[in-house]
Length: 274
Image 1 (spheres, rainbow, N blue to C red):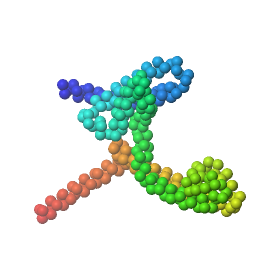
Image 2: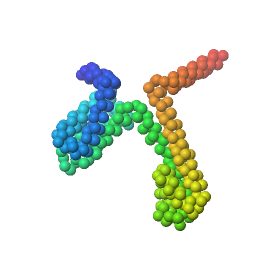
Image 3: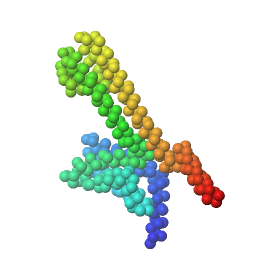
Image 4: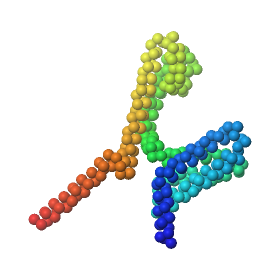
C-alpha cells in the first residue's frame, strides 16, 4: 500500500513541477478572470448558462489542481507550511460556494474575484514583488509618518496665510491638507497657486518647496525602500533555489566555514598531542 502511494505521489510531484501544468493553471486563472469580467456586461445575459457551466468547470479544475499539489507532498502538513499554499487553498475552498443560492450569490461572486490573485502565487516574479511590498510596509510607514508631519505643517501655514483667498480650500487645517493632497498629485495645482499669488506674490515658494519635499524626496525614499527590499528578496530566492550569483556566494561562504571548523578541530588535536 505504501509503495503504491509513493508511486502516485512521485507522479503527482512530477506533474506539479511540469511547466505545462503551471502554464495550464495560469491560463485557467486568466480564463476565470475573463469570465468574471464578461458577467458585468448585459450583452452576455443570453449566454448565462454557458458562463455558469464554464465557471463550474473552472472551479472543478482548481479543486483538482489543489488536490494534486496536496497529494504531491510527503506529508499533508508540509503543504500548509507555505503561506502561498494556504492562500490558494482558501481561495479554492471559498470558490466552492454555489452561485445558484440567492442568499450566497453575492458572496460567491466576490470570492471568485479573488481567484485572479492566484496569478501571484503561480508566478515567482509576482511573488517576489508581493513579498517585497509587504515587507516594505513597516519601513514605508515611517516615511508616511514624516510625510504626514510635513503635510500638517504646510496645512497649518496654508490655513493661516491663504484662508482669506479661498475659505473653501484653506478654511481649516483639514481642508488645507486635502488641498495639499491635490497639489501633491498635480491635480490642477497651478490654479490653486495662481489664486493665492494674486494676493501673495511670493506664494510660489510655498508650493514649490512642498512639491519638492513630497513629490521628489519622499517618493524617491519610498522607491528606494521597495528596491532595497526587492534586492534582498531576490538574493534570498536565489539562495533557496540554489541558482545565481547569490547562491554561489552563499555556497562558498558555507564551504569556507566548514574548512575553518575543520582547521580548528585539527589545531585542537595537535595541541592535545603536543
